[in-house]
Image (cartoon, rainbow, N blue to C red):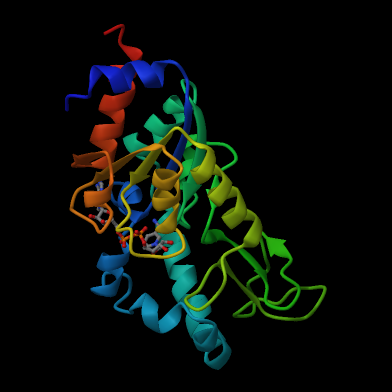
Length: 244
Ligand code: NAD
């Protein structure tokens, strides 16, 4: 992959860079993307059917078991070269990392202060008080919060639910204030995350999309880099780091 010399020089000066990642960056670690999941790779169940508050209300055990299965899947995979390249990029530029992924792979790779728009599947929270837990006693399914007695639920954002306000506001700020915005491995169809590159564009940032396929964002951005997120990000970090 060949990058523009001006852009590489700009990045070497350490600008404010905001990165938004989606399921595509974790695909090469073996985590199915949303489309894969709908096609049934994830236990032959569509997320549209089970990732809802209504589903948890009517059959909490089924929803809990589905997430337990997915949690185990995620625990077996490792961050890939794309996640690791973003850790390296953060040593060169002033990077804010926003993710739609719930797999926690950015943190596992070594990224800090990740803004998680859709929660994290490795955690759960009390369905009444919102208290978060990284570990729980799962002799009962779903487990209960020992303090409130209410069911614990996965700490992820379900369809029809609002995104965590703190994370969303931090993401809006990062989109508004960056000089370069990278949209990586996301179909740019899930809102409000899909607004973020548009906010960056409106604020005058250079917006770059890294994706294997065209998305609704592709025609609006300054650069479209087609291909694998891990390959392109590794090549980008190598190009910035070379004396060029
Ligand atoms: P999506 O599945 O809608 O889109 C994935 C995008 O990544 C597609 O545009 C695809 O072309 C691209 N892609 C696939 N492999 C790629 C690769 N190797 N390199 C570069 N691009 C690649 O995902 P989304 O836009 O993140 O939205 C789906 C929603 O589902 C999100 O809300 C997310 O929270 C959730 N989800 C999360 C995970 C995860 O945590 N890993 C996985 C699936 C879905």
